[in-house]
Structure formats: C-alpha cells, structure tokens
Amino acid sequence: MTEITPPLTALTRPEDLLAAGLAAPGDAGMLAEVAESFRIRITPAMQAAIAAPGDAADPVAAQFVPRAAELITRPEELADPIGDGAHAPVPGLTHRYPDRVILHITKTCDVYCRFCFRRETVGETGPLSDSALDMALAYIAFTPAVREVILTGGDPLTLSPRRIGAVIRRLNLIPHVEMIRIHTRVPVVAPERIGAALIAALRAARPSLWIVVHTNHAQELTPPARAALARLVEAGVPLLSQSVLLKGVNDSVAALSELFRTLLALRVKPYYLHHCDLAPGTASFRTTIDAGRALMRALRGAISGTALPAYVLDIPGGFGKVPITAEHFAPGAAPGLWRVTDWQGGVHDYADPGAALEAD
Image 1 (spheres, rainbow, N blue to C red):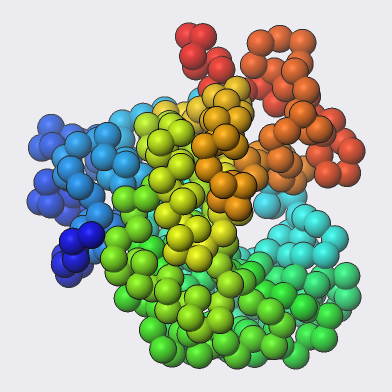
Image 2: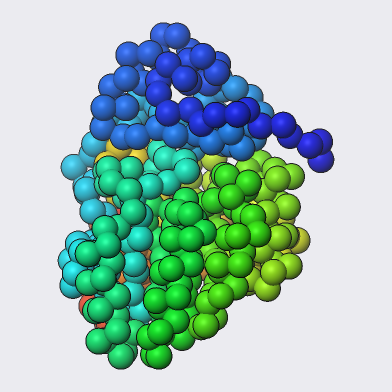
C-alpha cells in the first residue's frame, strides 16, 4: 500500500470543503444549512483516505461530507435514539445495565460522522466539567454492582494523555471496577495521537483496559492507522472494533468481508455491527433489517467465524442493545414491523423505517 501524506489541517467549515474539492460550488447553500444544525470536521488523515474527492459515493467521503438528505428528519427519528437520558443517574453518566456504566467524558470528536446517534449533542461542549466528573465517579464508587466503566463521548482519546491518565488513576482507586473500556475513532481518524504518552496512560490502568475502535470501511485503514493500531497491540492493549451498517458505504458482502478480514489481520477482533440508529437526518444511511440479516447470512459462509461481529440494534427508548437474531426478533403483524425482545424479556414494536422507505 502506498504511503499517504495527509493534509495539515482539519476541515470544519463549508468553505473548507469547497476549497478542498470535497463538495461542488452548487452545494454551498446546502452545506451552510446543514452546518447550522450539525457540526463538520474531517481530519487530515481522513481527507487523505478519500480516494475520489468530490464523489459522494466514495465510502470515506460519504461518512463525513454533509449531504442534503440530512435536512430531512423523518417522524420516527429521535434526538436521543438510544435513550441515554432515560438512564442518567447523574450528569455525564449512563447506567443502563446493572454491571456497567457509560462515562461521557467529553463531547468532542476528531471527526463528525453524518450518521452519528449523538449528532445533536457532540461538539456542543468539551470535556465533562470537574464537578460533573466528581459526581459521576462518586456514583460509581458508591455502586458496587458496577464492574466495568465505558469511556465514550464524544471521543475520549481527543483528550490529552494527562487528562485521560488522571481519570484512569481515579478509576483505579475504586476496588469493584474491574475493567475500563474506551470507544474511539482516534486510532483510525487521527492516528498521530497514539503516541508514547497516551500509551503510557492507558497501560497505567489497574483493571484490564480494552479499546473498541470504530471504523466502517477498509479504505479508512490507511498506513498511519494500521501503524497506530499496531502500537496499541504491541503495548498490550487488546482491541475490538465496532462498525455501523451504512447504505452506500459498506452494505455489501464484499465491503464488509474486506473490512472484517483486514481488522482481524491487524489484530482487531470485530465486535459489533450496529444497525443504523434513528438519529435525525440519517434515513439515507439506513438499510432494512432484512437486508442486514441477509448480509450476515452471506458473511457467515464467506469469512472466518473469528472475523464475524454481532449484528445488533439499540432498541429506541433506552431498552438496550440486542442481537438481531431469531431469539430477539420476530415478525410483527405488518411488513417491516418487528417484535423485539430486550435483555430483560420486555417486548417492543420496531417499525423498520428502511422497509417503509423502500415501499415508498
């Protein structure tokens, strides 16, 4: 693979996209309108990964360059599609399952994905305030059922190694916390951040520490990204991956096979393939449940079982994540309607909006 020399600065404004040739001059008005509601940021590494600048079908550009479809919010789309707010005992913390919590340590990301399920809140503030962090850590300390703390945001690895290290040291002092998990795009979209100081901070964790890397297409896995992943693995940090099934980006056996095989070769175990959540303005990315299940059936015969992630849905309303399997999904009374059983045995109707779009 040819070494890529990335540009020097991130693109954050509509005029930046136009100057870089990632959007046509006729799109200026649309870009400005989208930017009023949803943030834009494309790192140098991801600019370099775009193979066909100006082509909306490029699988990297499609994830980061705004599109007119984002201006359309369908009735089923939600500001909080996975229900974080329903399980927030204190600001900055989600406690949905008994033994683990999500600590939203920052609202900042290095890139802003056009399909993000937190797209209406990411970027609006920076790191969690000291007082909110104190409250969140106190809640964890006084809740002995919590064994795992998941750092997310935003993207935790946009924080300085000093700040990340400080949070890890405070978690180290809570005896019942056995595992820290960090969900991040940074090793892929800003691989230069994975340096000695950050790795030292991660290695200081007393409990085990895992990183879940978000990546959706093999084209994102540039030589610098591969080197960053290798630095983490060689430092003893175990890696998983999560991806989102995205129409026009990776909704084919070929694209997913290449992604999952490449990740496994890089010593990253594919963990989750998410069905695209009901975030505002994301309908153009959403496949049907049936299409996703067909892809998983085809993948099972095409690639090693070690490369297969779990295909999952976050049930809208905060009822948790479930695998899209016969155990949890049963056909409803109408086409596109599913009866979904959550982890506690509750049953919910999920009207597949992708199926409705295909019927239109």
